[in-house]
Image (cartoon, rainbow, N blue to C red; front, side):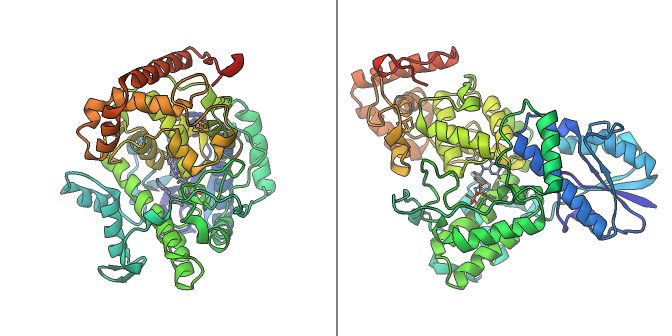
Amino acid sequence: MTTLRVVLGDQCSDALSALEDLDPGRDVVLMAEVRAECTYVRHHKQKIVLVLSAMRHFAQRLEARGVQVRYVRLDDPANTQTLAGEVARAAGEVRAARIVCTHPGEWRVLQDMRGWQARTGLPVEIREDGRFLCSLDRFRRWAADRKQLRMEFFYREMRRETGILMEAPDEPTGGQWNFDHDNRSALPRDIRPPAPRRFAPDAMTREVMDLVARDFADHFGTLDAFAWPVTAEEAEAALEDFVARRLPLFGAYQDAMAEGEPTLFHALVASAMNVGLLDPRAACAAAERAYREGHAPLNAVEGFIRQILGWREYVRGLYWARMPAYRETNALEATRKLPDFYWTGETSMACLRAAITQTRDLAYAHHIQRLMVTGNFALLAGLDPAEVNEWYMIVYADAFEWVELPNTHGMALFADGGVMASKPYAASGAYINRMSDHCRGCAHDVKAATGARACPFNFLYWDFVARHAERLARNPRMAMPLRTLAKLDPAKLRAMRGQAAAFLDALAHGDAPAGPAGSRLL
Ligand code: FAD
Ligand code: SF4
């Protein structure tokens, strides 16, 4: 009685539920590289390399343990190039009696899995993904009796339940749950973050890089700088490097941005965690240990743990509780097309240029760049959530829909009307200027809200607040900007809104508005 155990590309974990009770003498593990998964959105080249290389290394690891692995390569002539096709082919050829798999990370794939039973005639068991600290049932129970969902309350519950960073059942370490107010500094000029450890591609990864360069040449992004961990050992080394060298200042400069500093004090572990190479519990434990041993301060450690135990678990729960309707919402009725510069990085706006070009080269931008630069621009300019969601799914090595969608659709775009975030993360150029040095070298003047050199974030911000004033008036957290709006000189507001309209019109037509001395902006 052979059990076919299916392992997906983002399930490269020893502790995967589909592999529990595996009988190496009898069972077969199926891992299939399929074109449909590489192209349903046109993923960044580095993301395809990451997933395929992690899969190949993981298959090798299983084989070394004596597990029978049926590994289907992308260039195998018999490959049907769809997941369902490969499951059906394998089930027939190995004469499987049943199929076991782990709950996937995307709604789309879950629908596919639910069709495997009908297609193969075999029972299909979809197991809970135990790699998360909060089960989907647990999240639903937590959410069920609440009028409004807020991450902070979920996070406290997770701290209590797991005992992470707790002194007693209701006593958080340091006497408070959240140290976010200590985590908002810009980067001083004399502090240079240590470069993160890079993982040079081995022969197996280089082979995948050649394949991707050839077969997905027209996908976004470059491959030259590929340095992501692709094995559990590398992922652990990446975490160790972060804890030893960057965690102590992670908290203070978590929201900072700096020209030429694409990674600052961030961990760069999301891609490894999301494909299954790094256990989130291990990441939290390593950070907590650093605090207890006096190596890192509490504001940094709590900030890091909140991202993983709080945000990461919360967005997953929210995604599965709200899909599939979630992605169809468009609360702010945003319909503009994504401008070309999101792909080329060719824009006179220095903050956007930095975020987009590093995204092209590294498949990475840190949270504040995603939220307050590319996300903020998309929100203010009223870009179509479907196009923006797709962009974020394509461009980051760590992009998987369960985590990408709530962050983009909910947190950055407010397209869910406030399910994910308590207010729109809208900001003018002043925020970017406070948290970065981008404005110093920018063609735009961050202090100007109208005129040829005005920072587009300024006039777009006031246009956004005015455009949505009625809706935002229902939100107490928007009271301050609305009060400021009411006090604005009407002529100034008219001028800003006029400039916003001309700018957005030019954007829609792919034209660059005129800048100073006949230059072209955008
Ligand atoms: P660090 O800043 O060092 O944080 C540590 C870890 O905390 C991350 O590795 C990640 O696992 C977790 N984390 C931090 N913030 C979040 C968050 N908001 N939601 C969930 N987990 C979080 N994260 C993804 O993993 N995949 C995505 O596709 C993704 N898309 C995003 C889109 C937008 C618009 C925004 C605003 C955020 C998105 N995030 C996404 C969250 C966050 O930006 C990334 O997790 C982070 O930048 C990854 O880099 P890092 O490992 O250096 O993280
Ligand atoms: Fe960005 Fe405006 Fe600053 Fe330029 S001036 S970097 S567009 S915020």
